[in-house]
Amino acid sequence: MTAFRTKPNSLSLQALNIHSFLFIFCIVIVGIFLVIPLLFLLFYAFLDNNGNFVGLQNFRFYLSQESLSASLKNTIFVSITSTCCGVGFALIFAYAILRTNIPYKKILYYIASFPLFVPNLMYGLGLVYLFGNKGILTTLFGLEDFSIYGFLGIIIAQSIYVFPQSFLILYLGLKSSDYRLYEQAKIMGISPFKSFLHITLPSIKLPLISAILVSFILCFTDFGTPIIIGGGYSVLSIEIYKQIIGAQNLSMGATLSLLMFIPSLIAFVILKKVEKRTQSISTKATHYRIDSNPLRDSIFFILASIPILIIIGVMFAVFLASIITLYPHDLSLTLRHFLIKSSLDGIETLSNSLIISLLSAIFGTAFTFFFAYLYHVNKNAILRNIANFLVLLPAALPGLVLGISYILFFNQPDFKLAENVYVVNAFYWLYGTLWILVACNITHFFSVPSLSFRNALCKVDCELESVSHTMGISRWSMFKHVYIPLCLPTILENFMYFFLNSMVSISAVIFIYSASNKMAAITIVHLDEKGYIEEAAALAILILCINLGVKLLYDFGIKKYSKEKS
Image (cartoon, rainbow, N blue to C red; front, side):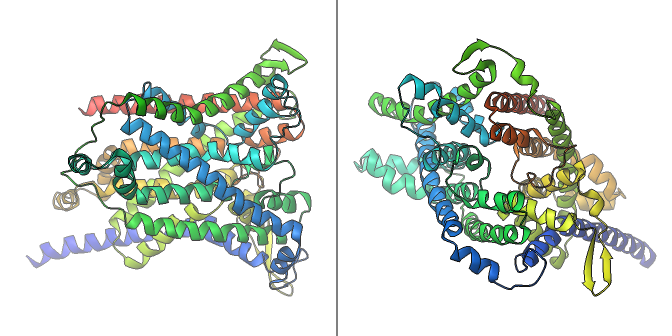
C-alpha cells in the first residue's frame, strides 16, 4: 500500500515541477517583452538626449513651455468632450435597441459595430473628404469659412471611435436589468422618466462608469485621429510623435510617454475597482417587456439614427474618395487608387499587414491560451500574483508608450554597465524585422485574450483533473483532448481579436516598423501626409473588407461548431 501511494505522489510532484517551470518560463518571456522595455522608458525619462542623468529636468522643461504643456491640457479637454459625446449617444442607442420598438434593430446594431473593423484614422479621412477645404458638403453648401480641422474634427472622429465600445458595454448592462422593478414602478404610478432616473440609471451605474473610463483612455491615448484631422491643434500623442520622429529626442519622447501613461493607469485602476463591484445577474430576474408607445419610438428612432447616419456618411465618403478619380476636378469612377501607386511600397503594405496580423493572431492566441492554462493548473500564489500583474498591465498601457519603450530597448546593440564594461543585447536582432511587430502586437493586446481564456478554463469541470489522474491520463493529453476542444469557441474568438486589432493598430507600431515591413495602417498616415487622400481611402476600404471577411468566417465557424456540438 505504501509503494502504491508513493508513486502517484512522486508523479504529481514531477508534473507540478514541470508546469511550474513552464509557467516561470512564460512569465519571463512576458517580462522581457513588457516589463524590461517599460523600465528602459522610465530610465530614459530622467536622461537628456546625450544620455546624461538630469533628474526631473525634462518634466520641468515640458511644464515650463506653454506650447508643450498646452498639449496636455488640450488632450484632457478633448478626451473629456469626446467621451461625453460618444458615451451619451451610445447610451441613447443602447436604450433605443433594448427598450423601444424602433424598426431595423439588427441592421442598426451591425452598422454600429462597423467602426471596430477599420483604423480609427478612417473617420478623419471621411470627415476631411466631407468637410475639408474642397470637401463634398463644403462645396455643396458653400461652407468655405468652416474648418473641420482641429478641435471640432477630433471630437467628431473620436466620438465615432469610442461609440461602438461604449455601446457594447451599455448594451450588456441594460440587457441584464430586472423587469420586475419596472412592473412595481408601474403599479405605483411612477412615470417612465422617473423610472429611468431612479431604476435604469442606478442599475447600469457600473457599466456606465466602465464605458466612460474605457472611452477616456481610448481618447487620451489616440494617435490616428489627431494625425489626420488635428491640423495645428496640439495634443499629447502628436507631441510625442514630433519628439521621436521629428526632433529625434528620445528622452523627451520618453518623458511625454510617462505623462500619457499616468492618467491612463489611474483610469484603469478605477475601472478594475468598478468591475470588482459588478454584481451578478439574479436567476429570478425577468426580461424587459417593451410597451407600445409610438411617440417614444419615433423620438428614439430619430436620436438613434444620428450616430448611425454619421457613421454611414463617413464610411460612404471614404468609399467615394477611393473610387473617384480626383474630386472635385475629375468625377469619373476608377479603381486605380486601389493599386496604391503613390506609395513606394504600393499594395505590398497590405500583404505585410496580413502576414503580421496572421502571425500575431496565431502566436498570440497560442501563447495566451497556454499562459492561461498554466495559470489555471498552477496553485503557487506568488507566481499567480506576478501573472495577474503582467496580464493587467498591457490593458493600461497606451500603444505609443509601448512602441517607444520598444525603440529604447530593442534598438540598443549593447548596454553600458560601467567604464569599458558592456553587455550585449541578446534581443537586438529583432529590431527591424517583422517579428518585433508581431511581439509588439501580442504584448499590446495580451490582456483581453488572457482574461477570456481564464474565464473559459474556469468553466471546465474541476473533477476532470482528478478523474484523469485516477485513470493515469497525462496532463498533456488532457490539454490536447479536453481543454482545447472545450475552449475552441474562445480560441477562435481571441484569434479574431488579435487579427482585427493588429490590422487596424497604428500607435504601437508607428515607431518600430522598417521599410521592408511597413503595415497598411501606417501607409495610410503617410499617404495622407503627402496629400494622396484617395489612395489612403482605398487602402482603408481594403482593410475594412478584409476584417469584415474575417468576421464572417468567424461567425460561420462558430455556427458550424454549435451545430456539430448540438
